[in-house]
Length: 459
Image 1 (cartoon, rainbow, N blue to C red):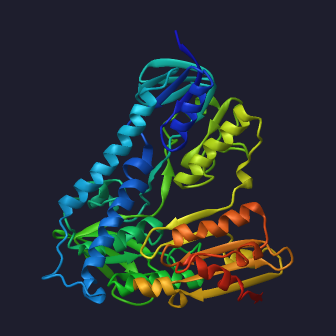
Image 2: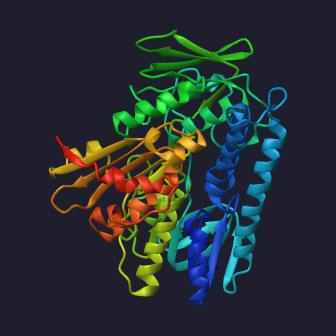
């Protein structure tokens, strides 16, 4: 006989625990199911561990630049990869244990470890244990994709998860995939001391960004000694003794990139293929993402999908916002929708890219009259003082309403500074709201009003 609950939460990524806690607050008896690690990708193999390692890599880079600041370090700085991993593991452990204890401490919650599969529209089996609930929430996340590259099955390779176990310095790391994950690992391991080759099939790195952003990011990486190979069609991988070679067909350069290790960073796939979704009648798209409406309801009444598995955002912050949308609609009488949120994210190379709203290219296709401005970071006093002058800031504005449409801050503090623009975008206030504000000197943000003062019509 099935155990009866008020709600079932499958997966404990960013949305699941918060939603379970909210239902616990509402007095609902809730089953929280996790098959592996509490906290999901972000806590265990994503944001938290990688940004911890990014911090170690930055420390190494700053140490090497010590003489520029008048700080003399005798001998070359040495990176201890075992210590880097141990520090990362400690930070991850704290976060993972925090989520685990949070769920175990719910007054009306039952934590169930194991793999959940739907057996019906409102029934789930966890390793043979039958559960039922009128409300079921799917928060199962995604994992690294392994595309059908010829030869891939015959060679060892790393992905973003297995990279978390690396406690040594690869002699030459070849990274296949020039998007956010690949770029962060490329700079990170170059700063640790590896030779790094970054391979991208398309003509540009992170092609969703404007061309000038892509070009500057490439220049930043190449200044650090990373070899970037774009336009790499017809990829193939093969062993060459103890090494691995990635065969390329690029417009220029050598026909292959041979290294000691290969990292695949070519996208993610949802963890939906072994959930028994068909037994519940839950619809997915051709890539396996669960179809949801604007309030994150699936095709089956009483079942919601949150986080990476719904294909409506691939970030920790979009997953948490999914929780906020569902909770507001269920408990607060506040109708919130996915379509109301403004796209925003960051690329955590150094210097970082902070993005909000439309790209310039997207704005051009909107049919609006546009204003745009761009400023090099070399003009920012705080950046010059810190010796961090790579990159630029740029914005695009609706000429009629004067509302900000999008911003890209590629430079010192860009991942934080972009929020000052994002908040005004949500408030639907004109750009002059920022332009007329008094900002602290010396900061990077104080140049945002100057940037906005240089707006000109965009053809």
